[in-house]
Length: 109
Length: 115
Image 1 (cartoon, chains in turn red, orange):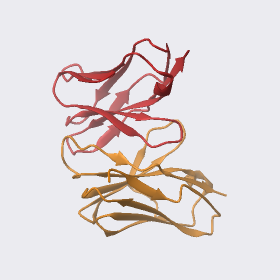
Image 2 (cartoon, chains in turn purple, brown):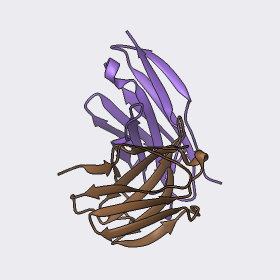
Image 3 (cartoon, chains in turn purple, green):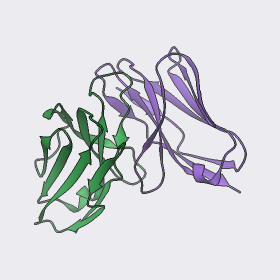
Image 4 (spheres, one colour):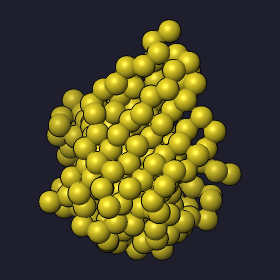
């Protein structure tokens, strides 16, 4: 079966760095996405990785290792507005998105 | 215009009512999606339209009926719903359905409550 695992909840301090991990087992691989979703709002796109390595976008970076079925989202200089759920999603061989359950990130002052 | 617009934002309906959710995008995207999302769960795919044709129906009950009148509009017709259908219904669009970097742009959602 297809499976994506990410921690249910994480807590971090304002100004710090946090890493949210995602491991996956899917039928084929056509890329991995990270989305941010604030409570009661729509998911918004953060990053896309299809090749191994690190993609950096401002305070957010995403890493992929296809051989390990592993990705992480790194958030630096955390701000209170970063409190949200972070969803990992993998596009399988049929170009279907398989979603993880999401990681709720709580930022404390 | 880089948005997906959904109406209404909130909808309360009885189990015998008929209502519709509407979605609109003007980004020239050729794929449009309906997702259902329950609290603290990831989005669940319901339907995909590609070039105005239904390409995926994820075994959704017939009380949900999608319609794509043109390339910019997507509707979800609701009839005889059950209380367990209460959820956030998200519309999304993307450039193409079957491409690698297929970034979805989501609307703000329609929060549905079935009494």
